[in-house]
Image 1 (cartoon, helix red, strand yellow):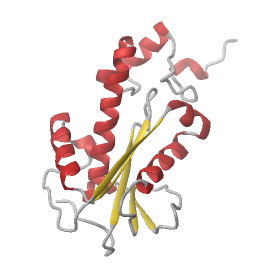
Image 2 (cartoon, rainbow, N blue to C red; image 1 turned 180 degrees about the vertical axis):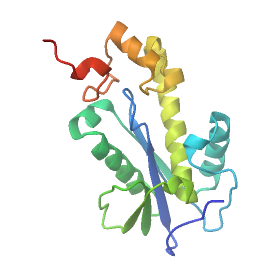
Image 3 (tube, rainbow, N blue to C red; image 1 turned 60 degrees about the horizontal axis):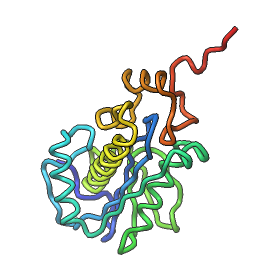
Length: 199
């Protein structure tokens, strides 16, 4: 079972993002402060859970968390500052929306930037080790998936309801056939042959 938290601080937030490798849609981050005694044996990295389990956990997290927040950063911002900076910014914004303000932050992965002077630690595969990061990964994933379901209605030919904007064969074929939308990340390699030169 995952550990409750990393530090000895009373108010520790975990943060994570979803959608970093997608060709379309936002990068979505969440930050969560869980009660010190919080226990859930099902909670894990959102990628290892089914949609049904993630949806169930989302309700539990939102009900029992001391505080949680979610931030979407769209394609224009991603293209402007790059996906790594956008991922970090979305996590920072999520942390800053928490009440009370955390005393310590733990971040999934190995990159972060100082946020209001709050000390932090980056933890590789943190979403498989600590409950507050895993909770953030579940919220980031469920909120992003719900967003992709909504914009799917606007552009059903890309089947975002199914692929969530990831670079599946079907998604790339749709880009080839129909072109791009305002939701596509133009700084990404949308089609494999983009790097090939016509000689």
